[in-house]
Image 1 (cartoon, protein in one colour):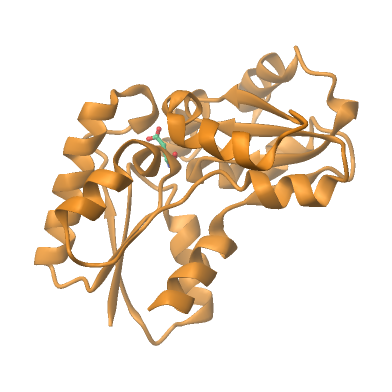
Image 2: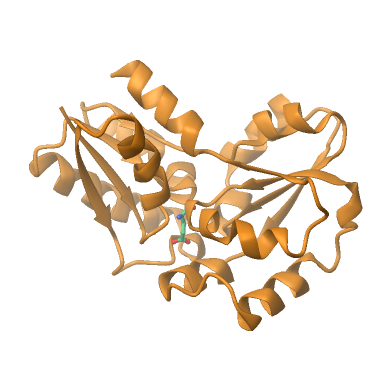
Amino acid sequence: MRIAFFDSGIGGLSVLEEALSRRPEVEFLYYADTDHVPYGQKSRAALIDYAGSAVSFLLAAGADAVVVACNTATAAAIDFLREQFAAPIFGMEPAVKPALAETAGRRVLVLATPLTLREQKLHHLLDAVDPAHCADLLPLPGLVAFAERREFDGPAVQDYLQQALAPFTLANYGAVVLGCTHFNYFKDSLAALLPAGIQFVDGCRGTINHVFHTL
Ligand code: DGL
C-alpha cells in the first residue's frame, strides 16, 4: 500500500509525520507544489487545476490513495478530485468540532488561509457544529510565507502575530484551531502571545485516524 500526501509546500509534512509515527511500515509519497505556493491566496479555479495535476502525478507514481494534506486545496477542490479520480482521496478541514467540544462554551479562534475562510465548505461546517456562534475566523496568510522560509519564530513572526491578534479579547478564548497545515509549526510562537492553558487543535490526528480506518 502506497499512500501519497500533497500540499503547497511543507505544511502537509506535519500530517505525514502523524502517519509515519503510527505506521512506519507503509510506503508514503509526498508532493510539495512549491511552484504554486501560497494556495491560500489563489482562486478556487486555480486550486482545482493545481490539485488535479498533483493527484494525477501521484497516481501515475503508483499511489493507491491520496491525502490532500491541505485545508485550502480540500476546501476548493475535494469534490472535483473525487469526481475525477477513482482512487480514495482524503481531505482535511479545520477541526472546529473537536475544538468546540473541548472549550465548554468559551470562544474558539479559527486560523486558516483566506481561501479556506471564504469557501462554503467551512461555512456549512460552522452552520452544522456552531449554532451558538462561538467561533471567530482569522486569516493568517503571512504564516505560510514564514513557514516556507523556515522562519518559525523570532521578532518578525511575533510582530505579525501580535498585530493580527490585536483586535481579539484573547482571555475569552478556550481554543485555537490550526486550520492550515503550515500553521502547525507556529504553536510555540502563538502560545507566547495567547493566555496560558489555551488548547491548540489541529486536524492531523483526526485525518490520519480516518485514513487508516478507511483503508
Ligand atoms: N497548507 C495549506 C493549508 O492547509 C495552505 C498553505 C498555502 O496557502 O499554500 O491550508
